[in-house]
Amino acid sequence: MSKESTPTPTEVINEDQKIFEDQKIFSWRGIFREKNMPPQERVAFYYDELKKGYQESILEAEIARQEARRPNDPADQKVTNLFETWASPAVQQRLNGALERRKRKGLDVGIGEEAVDLGLAGHFRIEEVHETTMAGKIPPKKKKERKERLATAEEVFQRWSSVEKTTLTTPHTIHRGPINWRLEVAQDKAKYLLRAEKQDEAASETEEGISLTSQETGCWLSQNLPNQPEIVAANIDLHLKEIKPKVEEEKFQELIGLLSAKAVLLYRKGLATKSLAPLIGALGDISAVQEVAPNNHRFATINWKVLRGAFFYKGEFSFRERLGYLGKAAFNLWKTGKEDPKAVTRSFLQMF
Image (cartoon, rainbow, N blue to C red; front, side):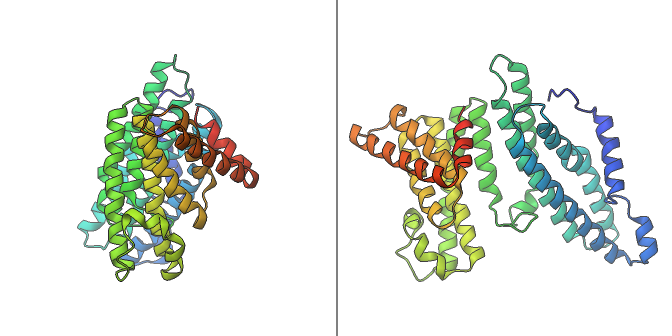
């Protein structure tokens, strides 16, 4: 990746060592001696501190990602530096090596494995989305820089297999927020493929993701509403208000996550295929979600694209139908803009 002040690999490793030692992530011997901790207690203490470090660094990286406006600005550099410090291959190798050494000593390192994998996964998501976004902000004439940013994102996608032993069985982030890691990665991968102008691959990725959301939603219904067979994955957007008081908030948020993921995947399928039908499906799902769990930026993003797609995207829709969807999207944007003009403006600017 081309950055004006990007450190060399050796400098990164040396800086990692300094930062982690300053934060006492990798160097706890003095504290252990002072506290006279037994081995298993040391492990719990060590990885609890590591978890806190990942929680803080992921939050910092996400804020910087949102603040980054162009390649090589301070926020862009901060995302890169945090990723190199907390989630570079060298750091991952070092952390996994520490886990293996403790395993060989017969210690329980389950808490450590979760902290490491979820911490890495959080930084993976931020980095792959950030690099994809930054690639889109590079002028087309600077092909080399654009390819380098996309190549960096691709490298992160290739590392997901190293944390899947945890992410595939853990329905929450390191901050304990609900998440379906497979669906989140599918959304990010589709965005990357679109930016890399691989429309066919992007369409295939969205199809797989949409199918997965239906399976996951069906499982959610069988576990949480087994006595309401009239509610199925295909019509669940019509029942969100009815479902909300019947389940615990955490479970309801899981459902919202599934439907939101489906909406984003349909939206990206529409972009990949230049078809209006997936966008209309995305609009229906995200409109239902907006009524019970508002996300103004995501809502505005999909409405902006429906507004444009009603004019230019293919599909067997009459002029009246297209005009109706256009009017609905315009009304949604007007209403949301009155409440949150920044979200509507930001989503509009991100289209270009």
